[in-house]
Length: 189
Image (cartoon, rainbow, N blue to C red; front, side, top):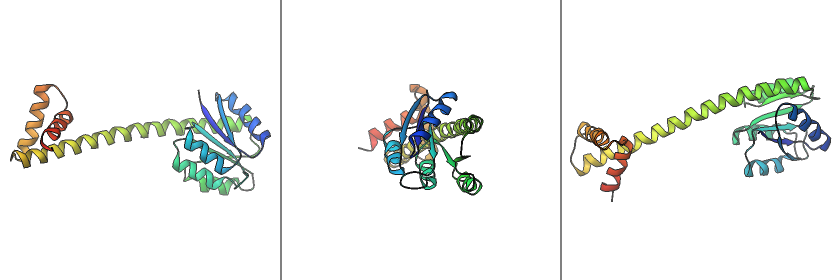
């Protein structure tokens, strides 16, 4: 199941894009005709893919693509006319936006979706690594705070506080973070 937001001012374009995306395995669609409506949709719901078929009712769509790339976890694809394709494509590349030339053929859509899936896979890996690193950093902060509390309240040295947390974790068969949280609960009152 893949959730797609199609942003275009033309109902005909929306219908054609849905047909092409259905062939690529996408099956849930929402549409918006303007940048304002698109921002509202993305504030309410997460999308796997956002496809912008320029121009829109209230702007060209280039600024919107940059905004959506920076403020959502969605893959963003923009379809632009041939005379601006190279210039716009080079500009949007640094923002992580895939650009495709209008009119879109089934082959172009297929290539675009291959690029989108590769991008999405890499982003998910980076997000998982980022989450893991944040958790590790949080654990280190809690443990260090507990060491400081032990040093202040029980006059331990830093190595003694460290050894105390490790020994308690081993003896109680819980993580050092859990021991540190217990220490903080006990001594920070």
